[in-house]
Length: 196
Image 1 (cartoon, one colour):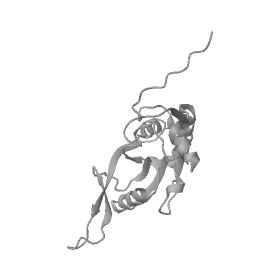
Image 2 (tube, rainbow, N blue to C red):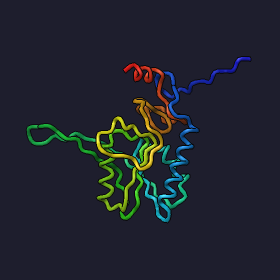
Image 3 (cartoon, rainbow, N blue to C red):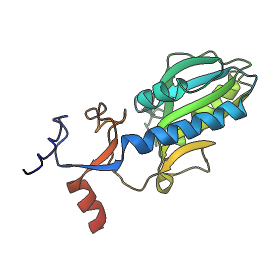
Image 4 (cartoon, rainbow, N blue to C red):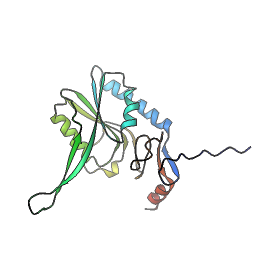
């Protein structure tokens, strides 16, 4: 009797799913990261600041394995082009985030699902220190170092990533596919990436 083929879930993401990281690989790495955090923050309260939207599943799994007091907050950064002067000369990009977070005197762990250019992360890092955080460390499930535009390395990370198009485990494509329990790409996106 032939084995039935597993049905691809209909997540609204066009293309044929191709696993990049399995749910088991992710859970093992989340456990390892939590073990490191538990050792590094002994005797402290960890102020988790999750960067939405891509981090929410990672944060949920990670905080349940942190065996220390945890204060969990989330921010959503947004960028806005700002024109300078009356002539509308070359503008700059400003980063804003909401809601306000309270971190004064705290040991902050800034968490990303996917760390890419580092520009927003660097801004948030500086901003949290300016708000009175005692320390700020960076944690990312996925680290796409090839996209980095600033000198910045996470203190904790799960996996280095080369794929340009991924979704699942909280990451969206751009908003769909977040409910997939593993990290995936599509065969079509992988083929385009390999052709370059």
